[in-house]
Length: 302
Image (cartoon, rainbow, N blue to C red; front, side, top):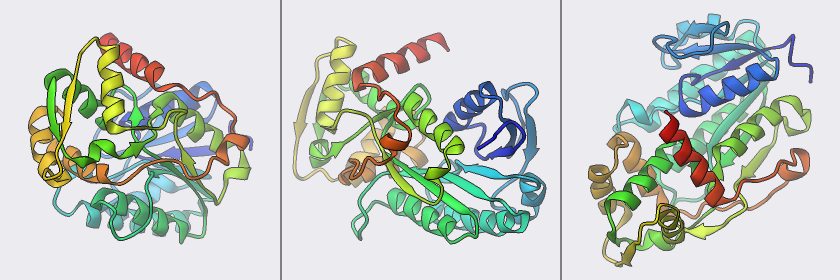
């Protein structure tokens, strides 16, 4: 796909992933438009910015006019815990209507990795529901499913860092034995950018993860070794994810509206069940320890 003369939209452009993706695509010569809800502070100079709000349908027409491909990177957890599923649903439905009206050809959506079923957390259910809504649009949707993203600015990474640094002794629920497959933010950005240029990804769903599969307990212990901190993690069966989400909310700097749904989702295993994207976009996957060191260095340099 020729991207230099094709206009690309990034929604959620001021967020953690949106900012990094904007930089990558600008460096690659793409013509971008970034949607912002309030102001464009911190956006790259020369990048077109348009105000819009997914929950205000009338603002979306100028955002999507003339767009070929849109990145859907918005979520509603930061707006408060209560009702975020409804807000996510309304936002996706509003976007589909406006994107169809504008003749958008492709949408690339970054959502959550997790098994389907009735036992999913509210957060993972909402991420899958958004994907289903987007897939019903007349455009072609690429759905990337990621687990914990390791990078300076990631809410999941901030939670792990705070737990390791502030709780040398942790009495934890059974979710510490749940397996996960964390992925470096650099790899996520490479996959997002790669999907734009490779049309073989259009209309497909891909699991994306790093090269290491581990339990959350192992993940925190390996993090602790990198920072030369010794951890004592004591799992107990009576402490549920919901109960543990309350003390995590006190310990970490992540807002409870974001941290609590994430913690409640730790009961669900988040491991790639297929790796077909690696044949299409054959990047070098960043090992967990390397990703953590990069993220820590990024925090130090900020």
